[in-house]
Amino acid sequence: MLIADRLYGCGAFVWEVMPRLKEVGGGFLFRIRDSIVARKEIRRLNDGSQIIEVAAMLPGDYHKEAGRMQVR
Image (cartoon, rainbow, N blue to C red; front, side, top):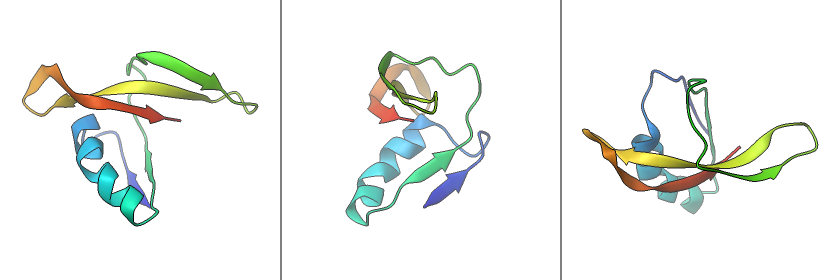
């Protein structure tokens, strides 16, 4: 389990480590800024939280996407 604060990194960091986390059956928990914009709501869960799609931007070029992730 990778736990980090919103000042720790960015979506690009999560994008880079996600394959390894999946490989070992791990996950991540990040506290994020409230200004993060969901690209798409995937599903609303019974507890009121949501599965959303967010863009991971390339480090140093916040106009280009590295990819998209589904997060809760």
